[in-house]
Length: 193
Image (cartoon, rainbow, N blue to C red; front, side):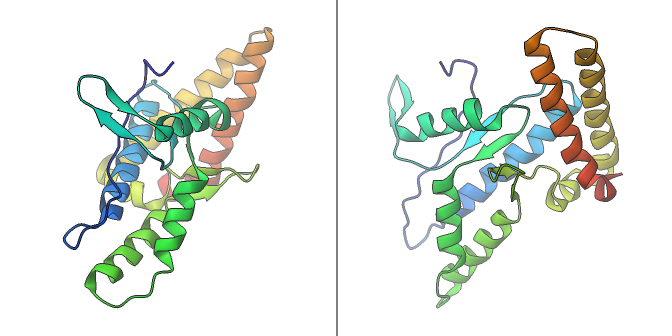
């Protein structure tokens, strides 16, 4: 079930006056900045971002493969507090990164694709993840960046300590996942601390 979910979606339909990648970039930026904020407040979550077919049905909400793909990424790939990025979104971004620049719209589209790709990295298992500690997000937080990072890091350390004192199999699994999250923070600490 996806009852505890937040869904963001936009149309990728291209028109002469619209750059769909702008909305994609904005949503990814919002997800990354909110992720760190929630983590720093002790409210971790997992997420999945991908593109797919979908439609909004009046009175019923949004339906389609886009939801099932995002749910799969959140529940099966992310596995601990982080946001997994799907292969269709990566293909979309890489395609737009390589378009032939012929006018302002194509140049802006290409630049947005490049900027968005800088917010995504491959983890040690070759899964694409939102890099919510990328320099872009630190710049968004401005004067609050160091404090937000430290609060999130402290939360992770507290979770590790809490799960370290428990014997249940599920708790040990969570302990390993928080160690992975801490490793990610440690790898990017120099820019934030």
